[in-house]
Image 1 (cartoon, rainbow, N blue to C red):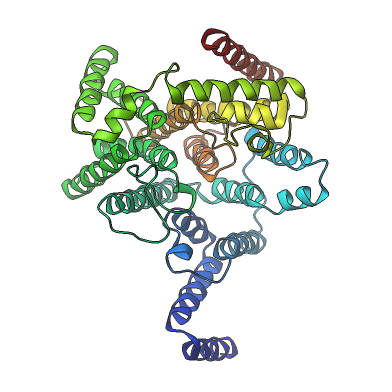
Image 2 (cartoon, rainbow, N blue to C red):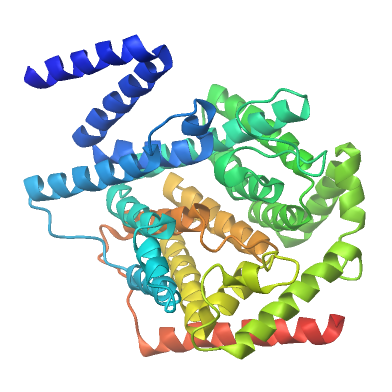
Length: 456
């Protein structure tokens, strides 16, 4: 009762100041109470708010995302204590992501204030959200909920971009280069919006073929059409490459290699026919010898020089932008990590994807029973293709410190937990695994050097 009285007094006082403030406080308090009752709500709301960005749309005067992250973490800890839970999710990715955070902090070695900022900054929050995801999204029902949150959130930013193209301004979003659509927050760049759509398309596709209800199928078709239209409006060349890879893998899984390739080529050509003119023009210049392509090769060369200057520790997080004459990012997440965090950083980042792909591959094998396609196997396949879509676009975008890859990494462990719960399987480090990751790291570096030799 005292708490309700205090809340009522606070709401009444805020009413005298601002109706908008009252609404914000009401929604915030209601959300925090719900999160304390069930921490999963906090994770799902956090993911949704990353996309929707209500704090930007409503000009909220509070650090909402920090409050959500802290409240969800506290709620989870309370639930662990009450339930006396001791079996936390164990996976090699846990060590790798913590080591990656430590490396980021150490990279600010010449600036103590920078080390403190990184310890309490955005990437530290990403690590917290990752651990909450793998410990809370551990059943099929919860995984389905998380995927629907991702799909609906992506639908929102797609609609946001479409409205923007029609001259309807919502929040602080604006057209890039006068024609390319964006959204807000972490999707304020057309390439980010395109990448977000690419990684969600496999879920829409997979659920469409698995779901039996006509209404759900119709909803998924409408969602897919809206996302596809928004994707074409972004004019993202890297996104288009990622989308081509995803389409090929989705079609291959349904009709085979040959037919999937043929259908994929026809579908991509059809998209270019209906795509807006600015997107078609950008696709025509998708060449390493054109202005933009040549500029990216130069950026990859500058990254190589930074890597050679300090291959062990790198030049430090966020220093790539500062050290390039053009003040641009590397436009390749792997090169960006290698430049700023050196060989150890590249090893850790590749290792995160290595074990996540291995988890998804094992979950597919565990679900495969007499060729019967279950919902779990459909989700595993969709997430596998989603991860490949992210990696494909990450070869042309610098998104190594953003939320999206780590949400996918967390969900991959959720899929694996569901598959292995009754079988006692688990991922673990071994000398062989370390050698495999190191080999992949060397292969990437050799490919990096090879590209530079061919095009420079």
